[in-house]
Every structure is written in structure tokens, then in C-alpha cells.
Image 1: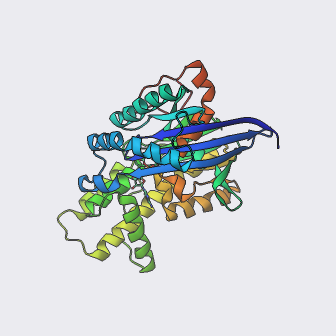
Image 2: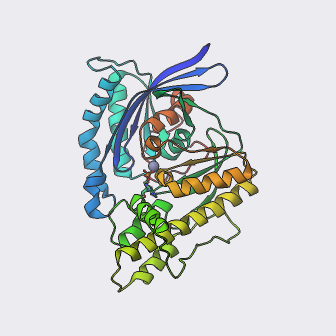
Image 3: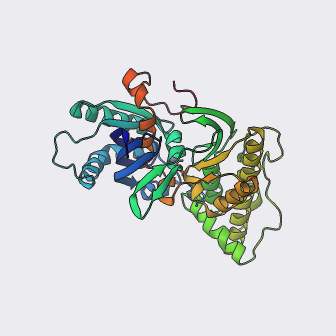
Length: 366
Ligand code: KG4
Ligand code: ZN
């Protein structure tokens, strides 16, 4: 095997409520195949701390990142076999610059810059959503749990990004060439799961809760008498809107004492309504933009019902579907290290400013 490019990258992710550090090495062979070995992939989730607030509390998240980055780095260096070394054999540091909660992003960036100076290596900003896309392109190699190849999808590819903060359809002509062709006008899919769950009295994060109860409802043949709306399902564009669904749940349940079965019925209808909208818009986007493959990323893709529906959709188009493994679907730093790899040339020219941008869109590199 001829090695044309080889490097070790340390990724840092602090955009929301996960503090994560990963160390990977990447081998790009001459045929363009990327072999990714994960030396460490450490994640500390703050979910339990934020649960009482019913969502992520930014200042608490920032404080936790500040407290946890150093011990997580030590843990990652130890896993990679680099502890005790003054200058670990790392070539590049990639850190999330956005989108996300700005105070949290700054914590990661400040930490990365200090580390870069100490180790005398470049630090490059990475886009969180590009990370989600790239994580979905990893496939396992043989039996090894820590070795993957990154497969280039068939272009033009369509990427569907569904997370707590994002709902986007992105047309992708290559890695780094993104055009947003559809997005939510109000709430994101994950946000809709979380907010409707809260109305039903379920804990944060609401996605997994709704999903479990919806499964039970289907098994027990429980169904809500009145359908919830499928917002914008028939609109001609590729945009989404989920706030109407939330309002419908709010008014439908107002002043009522809900039984366990009522909650299950709502959960099922919420999940099915969201899935119907996602499938309809994604199918439309595939047709309109003649996409050759579909990539799906973001925390919501942990949802089995949505995964199966997307599989049926891509089967009907006879096109490949790229879904992340469960461990790569929630926020992690491995995906940030991958995004850093694809932006390494910008690292040299310094054309990507190292500053937190809470709402930085995917698109041409700015
Ligand atoms: O990508 P992610 O980990 O963080 C953000 O960048 O937002 O996504 C978190 C979101 C939350 O809204 C959570 O409720 C949702 O993903 N989620 C799910 C499931 N697991 C997590 N939504 C539906 N079904 C699930 N199984
Ligand atoms: Zn995310």
C-alpha cells in the first residue's frame, strides 16, 4: 500500500453539552481511500446536569467544559499511549468554531490555542455540521472497533442534518462544497422532540423518550384519535417548520390529565408526523437536485423509526444511504478531527479565523 498522506489529529468539541477530545491518525492512500484509526475518543456528557433545567443551560455548560477539558485531554493522551510525553506526536489540532453556544465554543478554542502553542503545532477551526456529515461516511474495517475507512459518497450527494439545533438539507458536490437547499424556519427536529416531550411531562432529552413510548404505542396498537399536523409537508420549497406541531400538542393536551396511554398515543403521533415531513421533504430534495446518494447526520438519527423510513426512501430511489454508527451519531470529537483533516490546507494559509461563530452556516469556507 502506497501512503500518500499520513497525519495525526487531535479534535476538540465543546459546542453544546458534550466535552469531547479525540485523537485519530489518518492514512490517505494514493487511490484516495482514507483509513482512519481512532487512538482515543473521549466524551463526557453533561446531560444529567442539564436535565433539571429541561434543556442545556449555557453558563453551566461553559463552566463544565472549563473544568473537564484538562482531565479529558489527559485521558485521551493516556488512551493513545502518549501520556508523559512533553510533545505528543500530533500534527494538528482541530477545534469546533461553530455552530453552537458561543461561550462554550470559546472555551474549546482558548484551550486549543494554548495547547497549540505548548506543542508548537497549528490549530484549525472546524465546522460542527461538516463533522456530522463526515462521521456518517465512516464504515467499519473488518472486526476492528477502532479502524474505519471514510468512503466518498456518490456526488452530488444530499445531506440531511437533524439535531437539537439544526434541520437542514444540504446539497454537496464534494467535501467542502456545500449549499443549503432547505432548512427549518423555526424549531429544529430535535428541538421539536424535546419541547413536545416537555409538554407531555417527559424528561430532557425528549427524543429518546418519545421514541420509546411511540414504539410501545405501535406494539399496543394505541393511536391518537385526531391526527397532528404535518407542517409544510405540501409546500413547494424544501423548508421545514415544526413550531405548529408543538403548538398543536400544547393545545391538544391543555387542561387535561393525561394517562400513560394518552402519552404513548401522543408520542407515536409526534414521531410519525415528524417522520412523514422529513421523508416527504428529503424525497423532494433528491428529485429536484438529482442527488446520487443520501447522507444523514445529527443526534436525531439515533431514532430507529426515522432510520427505517429513510432506508425505505433510498431503496425506492435505488441509491446509497450513509448513516452514522450509533456511537458516532451524537456529538463527539472524532468528527471534528475529520473535519480538521479536510480543512488542513486552510490551516496553512490561516484563511479560517479562529473565533467562535454561534451560527456559522455550512457553505463556502469563510
Ligand atoms: O446532534 P446532537 O447530539 O446535539 C446537537 O448538536 O443538537 O442532537 C441532540 C438531539 C436532541 O434534541 C435529542 O432529543 C435528539 O437529538 N435525539 C433523538 C433521539 N436521540 C437523540 N431524537 C429522536 N429520537 C432519538 N432516539
Ligand atoms: Zn451535533
